[in-house]
Figure (cartoon, rainbow, N blue to C red):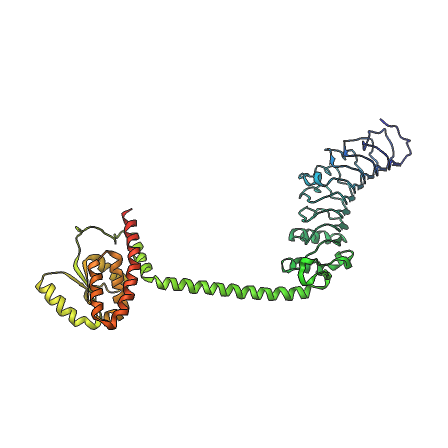
Length: 431
């Protein structure tokens, strides 16, 4: 145990080859120890007998790790110079803040030139008395470290790092500190980006211009495009104008794309409206425990046939079918003007009538082909069951009506598309 003169206050051991940083000393009055430019690769501890020590200089060594409790015996320590070492990787893994866990009295900390790339959130959690923190000339890109508890902080040196901007959380912390102390922040010689993505950061800096030191050295990097090499504190209005125009363009593009998608969806819905309406009524029927899809030739039907005709052919339908088939042939027919349920949706009435009828008889005429609901009845019929004879009949009749040929062809195409949906619905019902 070294024995020191009782009145010795400063101990210099610079430019030597010391490999051990501290010894246990006999009672003394030392207030400062300097071990600059040695080969101390790690700090050991705890060490005792240095209760009056207020300043330690361990700069320009090769230190890359610190043992737990190394600073535990320095109960009065206020200044720690540890710049020009290799503590970056070690501090990056100190998630619980063990290195400075016993240094609540520390007021000055220099960690510049330590190859620091990242600092954990709680690495400085016990430095409640810190006034000056120097993290300059490292390789820090993002700052997530907690500093809001440093209410006495007056100088934060972050110059010559790789910081493009500060995140909202860190800016909020600096605002908290500035309310209780005259904080000065140095962000000079960092690759600051001036763009729409960092607009809030540039605006925050401009509004708090007095907080920043060396303001003439704050330049926008090449990633800022047309604002390259401009002073950050002088480009806010230009950047806001640019970002506003970009916002308008983005909104216009968004509205255009949304409108296009809406029109596209509406077109698809209109194109397949019969399929969708039919599927809707099938789902509603299942919900009401009504089986709208049946298979097999042994089914008992309520009607022998559903007669599909245009209103212009109503007299023909009444004479031909009611007189000849119902009264003379003793058949039960479904006619829309007589048997449809009042108040029910037309589409629902049509589909229900087709389901309840063994056959569907179409009175094909130009008026039939011009009627939307007649064509819907034809489409619904194809959805509910295969009727090849009906299709052949339509084709034969279409050949006899040259004026209606294109309309029939159109309806047959619709029927082919709807037939695929019918098969899928039938398969689902079987499962």
